[in-house]
Length: 142
Image (cartoon, rainbow, N blue to C red; front, side):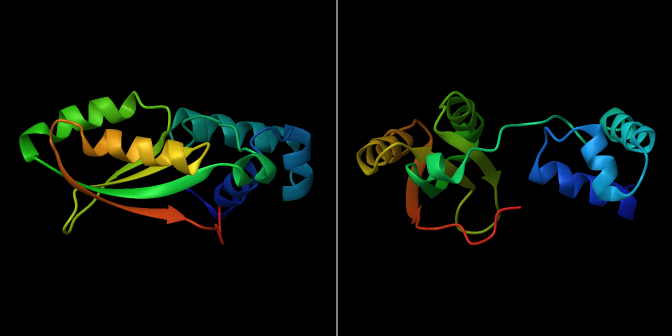
């Protein structure tokens, strides 16, 4: 279970996962030792599973992103997921309830590349249908 202090630390790491322990301590108003022990506890418990790269808005502005809703044949959904895991354009894959089985978040360098990617996903063995929505802008990104 996380505390308010843990959640505050996690929020700062979401802003900048490379922030130094000293910077995190200063912003939280605690000692570096306290921050280090919290980080170790959060990592050891699996709450923090790793650190990642956040791309600059200038770089991301040039990417075309979309949500692709997918209906898959139940017996082939695991193999669809296996293929999607190998596609570098796939950023996230969600299993969902409702009329579709999956929501895939993808990014491509151009609309043409996105179109080809959507066609490749739609042609996968086990995919019955897709519905795509291009992301025009991101209003909140935490």
